[in-house]
Image (cartoon, rainbow, N blue to C red; front, side):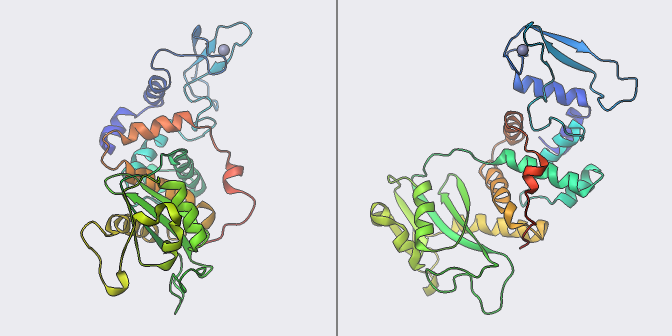
Length: 320
Ligand SMILES: [Zn+2]
């Protein structure tokens, strides 16, 4: 769905609500509290100025319940002061922005009053993009790490093999099943033990092959089960491809992610890095799906809203 279609289809609150209703209750409206399908629709007079401008709501007819609700109740949209059509457009922009979109850009494009509102909106959409479950990767899996953050003079990402990286550099481990999914994991360091856990949490013992570069930590990170399947490409010797043995597809994903970070976010706080990774991963894995808007919207309808206080946490942001 392109932005013009999106704008036409979801120009009003009623259109958005009708869409959410259809998505949430394809077989007819049910009470959000007790699941009852005996529901009455109550029209509301919104000619008087008030906070709630919604023209109708539902009421459960079960005498012990009597819950009043709409299609946004209990979803990410609940209690939001932003009109639904702005949420829909925001999602349209985010799912299509290959390299991501900053809160500042969202604020401008959607005419949102405050930066904070735009930032919170983007983060709630990102939260819905988090993968909560995933099967183990099989086939040919490429693994690589990248370092995000300020460059420090004379301080390479891999300080020396197997040791921790400079504290202002953040490690992101990328795993990509060739022809399949990408996963990005924010890691505390690039030590063998850390890599071992990430690899074994994500890659099946039945994988056909695991390809990495010749960073020594990977050799130890395979453990006895994956060791026989491990192949390395010798980047130090400036060899990049040897038949099937290369890490180009995971590196391509990294380069897109880095361009997004550098070009759009400027200052991604570390506390939120995992959310940016989720967003990127989600979009990347659905880049060829024509229904990615619908897929993501379905998640937004199914997830529990995240309170602002929980999102910002207590500590001050640590900037990259
Ligand atoms: Zn009920």
